[in-house]
Image (cartoon, rainbow, N blue to C red):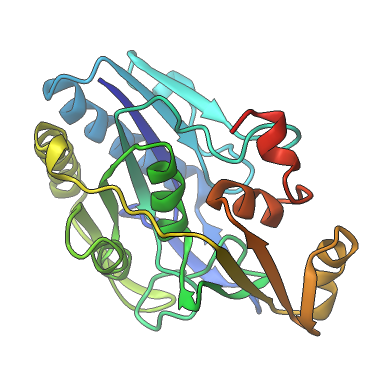
Length: 275
């Protein structure tokens, strides 16, 4: 079985942050990265115990420089994202998808370091009228390629968000408990590691029980930015601008929709990658 893992950093136990005035700033970054590697390795141990034959971990935080491959499980492949002409989703062909170290969407009061993709630029994302964050987008992109999401880890707000999005049909591991955007109690590291190992193992053993979350087209995504200049480039690419700070993306394909948000002109991304 081939397993796809997308990582983030804010939802890892022991990772701490502060406000830089507008968005988030991670402190003690080296320690944070070591904690992420430990949680990834614990998860992978459980997956291999459950029969995984290949695991690819994508370093999904910031500039994709959070994981040192020398510290990663010896049987695990590491992917780094550098933008450019790469596809917006690399999950095709896998048997299951996992998101580790996640956080709640922008504006969730009890979500630690909550944001949606860019804590300095994104105010809100709505897909067909419903609020959505990074967790939901990841689940939908995987489901498009018929890959079920089986496990999410992060603070209690992130775990809640994942369960609400999938009506409870996903395994979660709580790594910390947040009280506000920058107030948190981190759970014991050894406890989190063991829960990730066991949680990943149990989730993969129950693989056939997890649903594919698909939303019927057409899709409309209202993307509200924090400052008007954040919307200028998208408008130049032909994206409709509803007001000073709100963009409207449209598509009949969820992957194309998200590619537009990442700077692709409508239809171009999917033609290039035969999607």
